[in-house]
Image 1: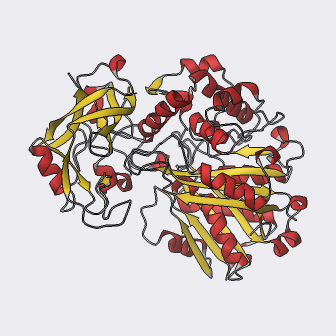
Image 2: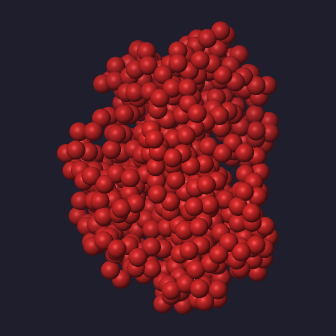
Length: 405
Length: 140
């Protein structure tokens, strides 16, 4: 599908920490707001999407059956093709692949892809992050929560511990990633946390679930994001600078090693990265800006290795010797990522790498603009398999016009 | 659904998972071992994740196990204040002898004593009426 579809508009609502007194937007309001921004960015209007495609990423706070169809009703759209993303943080990237395939098949010409969530508005019986009913049902939960796993941080901590031990990664090296993304958030008015911090601040932050510290954890926000993907033909007629889909790879439930005892330090990006690079006809050295799904710094470190920016086990040395700033050798999470930018629920944070990739390729990133950004690598990381690591790993290569041929 | 403020979470016991919980009450750790290929499936699966065979007899595993990875939860998360009285909670991924990998709490183990490779033994701990959760403690 190389170069046959392109993203022509993106939208990201302001994020909210839902502090007292702030207007509480519903998920539908945030979806409409993000869609409105994306339509405006693309120079399109709502009426351009009747008889076209609508894709809706699953929202945790929306306990709704037929959620995607209900969203069409609430937006007053009559789509010919309807998709629902159900892969957590990989949904936004996976929906780009599905939508592009349907566009290339000639079923529709364009898709409006939307997602929003309000994790801070889920009713809860006690302060702190709430547990939605969806998280506390079924076999996966029955052998997890009652066994002592209180949340994603403990699950990630178990994967991070093993990875740090196997690969000799230090907390100070992980701090390089956290500090770099915070520096980028300082340059992005849309990021939720913009006060710079140092490696020492990171190391001094409270330990939550060893080896994961407070500054390793993504802050939840309420918010919505959207993008518009269309055929290359339409893209050339509507957008100043479309971001073409040059390569993609996707896997869910990747195993490394025996299924009862897999190596959880090896993720599906080992498979989908090379797939996406091969389709795009590029390698890691050609990437101008790297926008990994980045809810924890070690998840970024794993991807640096698994995408081949450095060898296996060399991620720690790599981040010590590589300038990861927007003006550096490998610009990383230039929007501040989810870590400093905020995560509108695990499922919707996956839009952020795509939105920033398009922003960079269009040259609209202002103070954090990567000079000559033509090739962006973005990823989606969805969920955690029981006692393992990433459940869905999606890789996306986007590029400017000249690189699509 | 139990009282999350004062209790730790309980599983919902179904026809699919009842053999596990009944064995736990008797002090045995059981997992589904595929009749066709021998792969041990955990948590319970509808067919073998390796070969697709639906004949998955519950088989006693352990009682020994080895720490594959570990963490120490120092505060409660996701609205489970019922764990507060047990903080810090030592958690591990445990490779059960003859079985598969499981999440497990490690008890009678100081946070500074947990390490990858540590040998453990399972023990069934009651967490409410008739519900026993497999936990592990360091092997003697």
